[in-house]
Image (cartoon, rainbow, N blue to C red; front, side):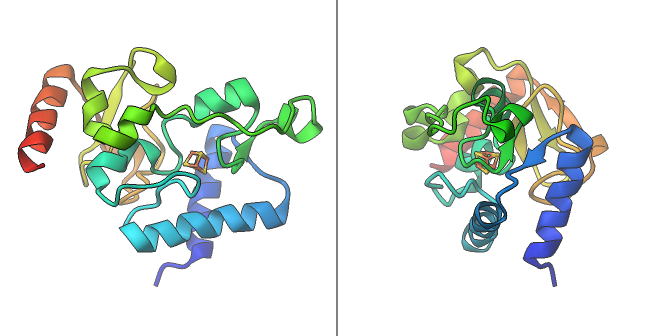
Length: 178
Ligand code: SF4
């Protein structure tokens, strides 16, 4: 049976490969990891412990850890919203440890992730690329697909580009099911 230690080991492998660092304060790290673990069991997927998930996978895909907003937050503030991932400037104190403002637009909380497919991507920029896991359908808006799917653990090679027309069809599908 998968344990919280297994989950963290997978996260660490991805972090090491992508050059991300975890919060060095063990108590904070443990609390955040536990929150992700709790969400995985509560919702069936590891959504961000600092955000309110809807409980519907399709609506929460952008806030499955590592979320779509992590890279932009680390670049600007030195850490992600939850301070799970941090950079050297944050660790050294060169970057202040002030709270990171929520980058996820409020409308995503109200309308869910499918609504953003035709709109702007993380950080208010045009969405550069969306990737889909061909095994489970997980979608993420990133420059590159993740090394491991956070939902089904499929490898990076199992991701494919998710094109604009597919986004429209997917959105229609979501709307039909709502
Ligand atoms: S802010 Fe993003 S990267 Fe940080 S813990 Fe939450 S989901 Fe994970």
